[in-house]
Image (cartoon, rainbow, N blue to C red; front, side, top):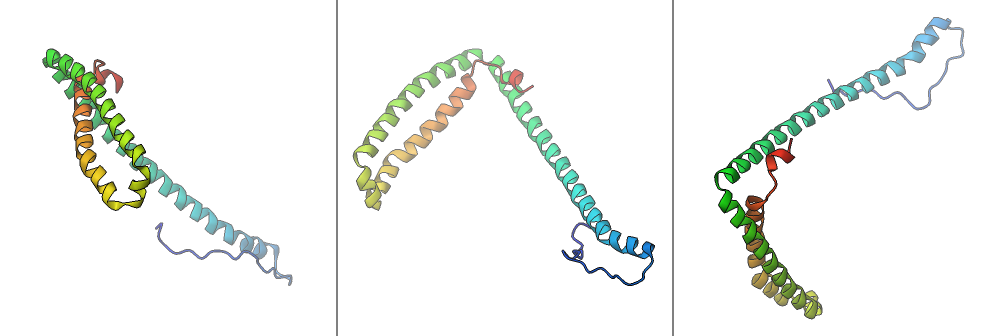
Length: 157
């Protein structure tokens, strides 16, 4: 239905000035508009379907997020001491990450020209700092989420 090729009415039309009846002219002049109306109705139907799919996607994602927040809240209630320890560890690790980033940025600023010109220096920097920074970020993210003092299930509702 929506993929059927439609003939597009010409931009400029010719008018027959011969002695046709007025009803024939009215019918001829309405023909391009009926095609445009049908096309607009097809576009509207496709847009309505798109909106339905987006609403379903949002509902599904919201349900998944709400379930995850509830599970996290239950874990925190079952392990309050561990949740507090995770919070403290995340604070310490955040400070360590800040210092680590300070060192990385100093090295990049000191060797900026060389990093642009030399692929070896860039690879060396990435190999030396990349994996540690990625893992540190992952651990910090987990500890922060587990040690978050606000109840995530209340914020998603």
